[in-house]
Image (cartoon, rainbow, N blue to C red; front, side, top):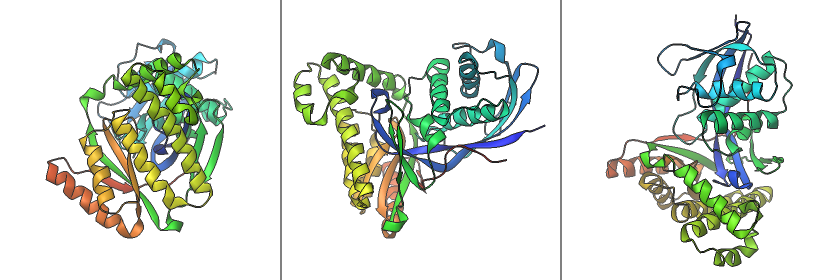
Length: 368
């Protein structure tokens, strides 16, 4: 017997890429695309997981056997990891039945895994009366992904899914998890934010995320700071002069300038200067392409084509090496940009991208 239905959204990051594991600033907002979970408790110690989006039938796991390194290495590791993280933190979580349905594109850099984690945690929180605060839910989901799944992700994705509110972008300090909801009404300014899912994920992305993270940690250690967030933007040139490794120097430059870009975007939005956000997004793409080196031909093509067709600004979003880009455009130019991007992809022999409008939407919630 089902005891409830919950939903958690994917997210798109407006600005602040790879800053979250450097204790920095990010600015995501929730998408209308969600993972929906129908769930109920079990009293036999079993976790039963089923997805309408994945073949192979239901998977049953004993909750007492869940441990890092024991998972089968597929989608069930994410909800199983959440159960493990909750129990490992001392929360009295028992067995459960879960059925999942998702409209969040996978492999698109839009946090489908975080949405799966957060909806699992939210359902278990309600079913077992845990009374978790949303920021704590996000932390536990991050631990599930870091420790159980083994992916060294930061805290942004889970916090965005758990904490975003409709009509706003989330200005998040990833060090102390302090949050500000910044109004983001693009339509009122005649603007639209397009997400262009390239539907590409390059194989060389495997392990590259971890290398970037290790390089950032090496930079912080060389500069004698706890994290790159602690390098003031005004002191960047002096800091870079102290670094001998060119690769580390590029990583440090991106993180410090990206944190500054988040602050600039917040200032523009609070001043009602929404159009001024566009050039900051474009600067961010150049930094991710040239300093962090995580773009790819498909993402660059979206950005270059969008700008040539009249976009206000554009950049890749997400972890990189594929996935999605965002394009800020006047509503009147949206159709032209969509057409131009599709034609550019066809001209290069790339597969057709998926393009949709990003609307700042509600965070995780109970539906029934």
